[in-house]
Image (tube, rainbow, N blue to C red; front, side, top):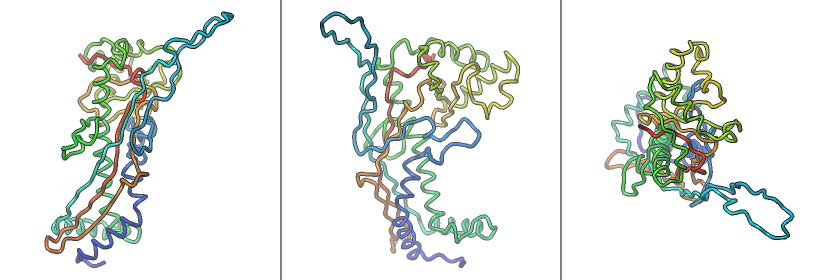
Length: 330
């Protein structure tokens, strides 16, 4: 393989690669949970605990949720039960996202030399991973990280913004708003002390005690949190009861006495409130059906750079706010 780099040829081959592999590229980019997660850790693929939904515009996330409907009969009358459908419907809408990248001549040469070094070291087979795929993988990998860590959890929608936090309202943003609005019932917000390595077991047990039996015993609950919450719990447990249950804490990330797993999300770093909810209640939305997903590559002769232009749509949502339980954060 030659050590020189023809940018015109690279732009053409990148565009050809992008066109021929568009479906695969967008599948990788728009579903960050498919190849996400860290093996044998509490950071799992999003698809393992979220509902991933392909949506072209606005969707109602809350399907028919039925409350109490039974009542005495033999009345010879029709007595419809008030508030039988007792959850407030929630709506989410995909938002436009894009990648505008400029690969300068010097940056491309650096990437190319790094690529060649890995090829010569037998770390990359150029027949299986051409330079075009090498570049694409780096772009898509960063896009996936941006969406999961920043947009999906911490985003605050700002159409005029320029970063991943501006694309859409993230789950943390929506949870806090739902608490303020009363969509999350006040009884679901449990009064606890600030979680620490000396009290986390007792304080988290307070939150669990506030979850109704029907949801607790359904075996469908998860605890989404940051790493600090999980390690505080484990440290407190070791101090109180010894190390046995957590000799393999990475491999058995559940709350003792329950089937509730800890799911660690890097995007919740600094947010020390554990979020208990039902599996699938958090929703990740993307659109690959409406034609909004576009990808183009071109070479600027005078500026000697390659432009990568990609458009798509993503969003996050909560299906049932009434099925969220956490502490008061103080």
